[in-house]
Length: 96
Image (cartoon, rainbow, N blue to C red):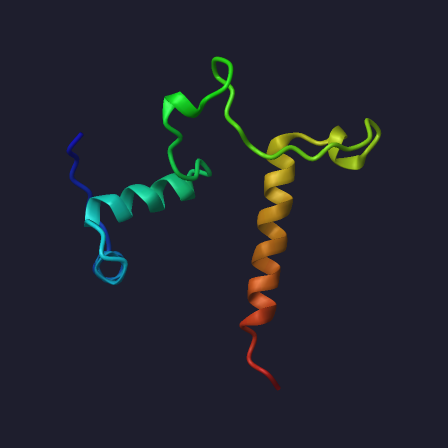
C-alpha cells in the first residue's frame, strides 16, 4: 500500500543512511522499524504458525502467585519502558 507521510528531515536522513549501511531498500527498513516500534518484530510466514492464531513466542513459566501474574500486560510494558528509559538516562548522564 502506498501512503505519504510528512517526516522530519533528520529522521528521513537517518533511515536512508541505515538502509544504505544495511544494503536494503528504504521501504524494507521503514517496515522493519515500524514493526519493531509496534512490538511485532519480524513477520512470521503463515506456514510457520502453529494452531490458528498462535505465534511461536518464548514463554517463561512462573508461579500462579508471582507479582507479574496479577498485573495487566499494559502495566508490565509501561514498567519495562520506564526501566529502560531510566537506564538510558543514567547511561548517557555526563560524568561529574
